[in-house]
Image (cartoon, rainbow, N blue to C red; front, side, top):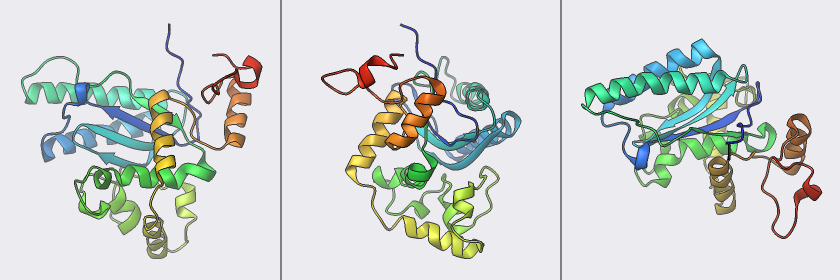
Length: 233
């Protein structure tokens, strides 16, 4: 059965996840992180991707990205992936793929889930018990978004800029978002939509995307067809 196309809407944020094959490490040292970062910077500029948040973990990475066009994300991930695998295989005298299949992409409801995804991404090393606070992890956008560090990978989202006109106050407001925990239900929802490629948003947002793309944006409810099978793809 052919795979369904991803939900890609230009101008709308998307949560991107790519993992190492068999959960193997894709970064072994600072040089690996730097190489990946440099290639990502070149690819996202060339193909029109605006990165708002990121985390590079040892065996996977997350991006919060707004694409300029329908193929911006695909071309960016393909470009950086190809170049980085060439580097990695040469550096570690290995062959074959580095990635666990296709990258995963989830369309995000800006109004209701954008800052939740910011926090979900930047809190990754905390949930993994690698650090006690996101500021302690180097390979993250938290330093730019929360502390004002210069980071050429980051393009601030308009809702981030709307936190406050003053940069220092904006960063303070952003840090304040991290005082609240992401509840287990929301964590499970993010993980499920990421794994399955569904849309992450409230029902009104999902309805809007379904009308626009003529595709289901959520799994069928148990015990019956969603809307009597209107969207079956």
